[in-house]
Length: 502
Image 1 (cartoon, rainbow, N blue to C red):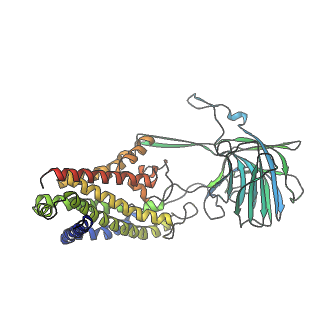
Image 2: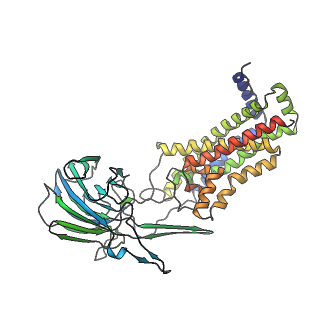
Image 3: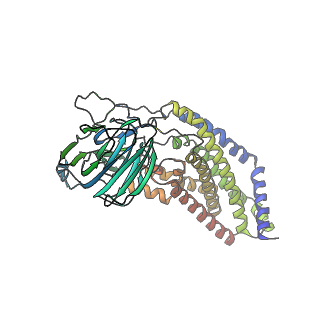
């Protein structure tokens, strides 16, 4: 009999063993309704109530940050705007900051401080736009409607920039000399009206300072400013008239604009065809960092607590009875027997975890949306999103990996209670320990323990501002930690099983 045939026969035999222990089957089947019950219970407790001023809502119905200095005039129909960005630097008041504790800080320009040109549907926060800019360290970027930036050449000022509009289509170009142009990107902005606002802008994102220590997390935001100088401004096709300057997204002088936020006041200076703008802020989506999908999958924790004991007992029970001796007598290849058991428990865990995740998501999400986890502060998610399916299937992979880890520890320890306690300690305890730890320590704890696998349940990028440690790493990093522990435990279990008596 070939090795493959022997392995398949053993997998079938181990599956038969798992199915014939009635109490195990009952517990595994109960995992699904238990998860659904906790999903129903917990989802009603997740409520989001925004405070303060209503958010600025962008063209896609989502909350955005839209703040910068804008010098503009109307342009009707198709046209273009070209400018030469000659310099970016800090304003004088930003060149030295003395903090409350007496510390002297010498700021630098923010990496994505922008100096560029923009076509915007209206001179107000949240209006649709397309823009191209040069930055101090991120190169040339093109942005539209608060989506992801499109990266162009890795250039800094001085740099020539151009935007061409044809209906709803806007194309951005950059040039070193104003003669040979390089296309950066073409974007569609269907919300642009026939007459849109075009002009120059200067922006500088807030400086973020995150401090996480034992028992506390603090997030500080300090507004920053940048100064940009332009010349050779050309807007053929624009309506003749004076340029108008606004601090988009900042409180106006009358203070009667509830949809606008606070921020430093900018300035515009024009002299002999040279324009100097000083501005702060940025334009991007401004969604809450909490992940509704991650919240909807929290009930899987309780299902995992049922799977771990079954995975351990799947091997330790046989050590208490002569069953394992009979198995080894029939199949002396002990490593193949352990591998077959690992295969059966991994597939069982994957199927149960995936189904439980799908049930938990389906039960939780409608209630969470009704409780405030919906636009504009949260992205709309559905089962049609690939990231949602990655979280659901990833939860199945998490279950499979932890089940194999539990089995491997059972083979190593040959003691049910010890193996179950060790598995739970490795998977659950780091989540509680990591919560009060400093940021770097909490992140490394997730890299180095199976607890990082819970990152698979998150659809948003890592966010260090959240209290849950698994939210600080990428999903595949967490799953790699689970897989590493599962493989290591299985390999050690196989080696010890070959050396010891059954």
